[in-house]
Amino acid sequence: MKILVLNCGSSSLKYQLVDMDGEKLLAKGLVERIGMAGSHIKHTKVAGKEKFDKDVSFPTHTEAIKFVLDMLVDKKFGVLKNLSELSAAGHRVVHGGEDFTESALVTPKVLEGIRKVTPLAPLHNPANLQGIEAVQKVLPDLPNVVVFDTSFHQTMPATSYLYGIPYEFYKKEKIRRYGFHGTSHKYVSQRCAELLGKPIKELRIITCHLGNGSSITAVKKGKSLDTTMGYSPTAGVIMGTRSGDVDPAVLIQLASLGYDADKINEICNKKSGLLGISGVSSDLRDVEEAAEDNNWRAETAQNMLIYEVKKYIGAYAAAMGGVDAIVFTAGIGENGIAFREKVCKDLEFLGVKFDKNNNKVRGEEVLISKKRSPVKVFVIPTNEELMIARDTQRLVLGSAPAKKAAAKKTTAKRTAKKTAAK
Ligand code: ADP
Image (cartoon, rainbow, N blue to C red; front, side, top):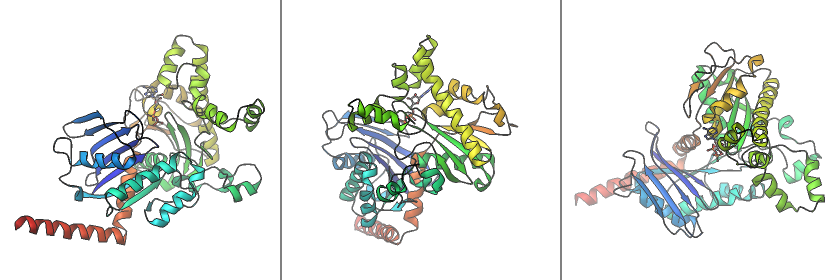
């Protein structure tokens, strides 16, 4: 079964083609600047490593999807003989609100549900919808599945998801903690349980997804108990350019100084975090380099992130009544050797016996604590696309219309064979 995984932003489209037989990645790519001057596609055929890297005009997501599909069947860069080999498309959707606790097969009702929660993710959900609609336009018979960033966190209890503001704001406006990066936290926690060889239902795991956007989750018995991102992905630890948690009075003060909502939004999401504190860069590598050159602001920005990650690990261990494993993932978590060491060496009190030698890895699945450490620490590269492909396969195989589509495909193949034979 071959599945096209799509992650559509407002002007971008990331894709992977996965063969579920062996979970092999066949092709991947990125389209940027859709609807703008200088739109561009980078496509890679994994076997043979052929690359297509060119400026191509894409007025909308539909043209981009059409081009991607052409690439997939191209003689040189393609990996499919024809598009009938595609079984389904799986789409990443940022916000599912409270209605989507699971991934879903796309129906008109599901699309309506995604539209309904758009006020919660005004920048992301419309772009995700555009991607689905573009696939429906180009390949009307292909089943589509949606996988939400928020779903995994829908298991949080009210004590974690409510804010201490009047309850009416939750009831009427749906203002609550949602949490994001759910697909990643789910994948790495499940993988961690596999690596430990224990049922996830017996484990308390803290998953640290640390990249440009960062979130930490307490996963108790396989379910999200609490997570650092909140109503929006701006909350939690400091990030590349996002502030993380701030006292609401700070925002009120900014408003009284004359900053309007758009400006405050820009400050908190684009100008804060590592960039805002260091004044150097949003990239931890640059910040670390500047800190080595005795740049105090850079050193402080780096130390703030280390401190906040430790603080949440401690908090979540307390929230779960202990911790069995800690997982690092995403750009910083997978590659930040010095960063991981600085976080872990202060966690000995919690039962972490850190192994400096094991830690000398980037982007590999590895145990970075000692084998006999009471609390195990892992680096597990995240694979959100594979999770999306797995959910897509599960839902498509389990659904009646998709079975019909599969049957139709077999009939179409037979007819094609007969026609060819004639
Ligand atoms: P996104 O949240 O955009 O998906 P990534 O998960 O790709 O981001 O993470 C990107 C971040 O990872 C970079 O900004 C950089 O700070 C960090 N990073 C990548 N490599 C290293 C490294 N070797 N050391 C420290 N940080 C790194």
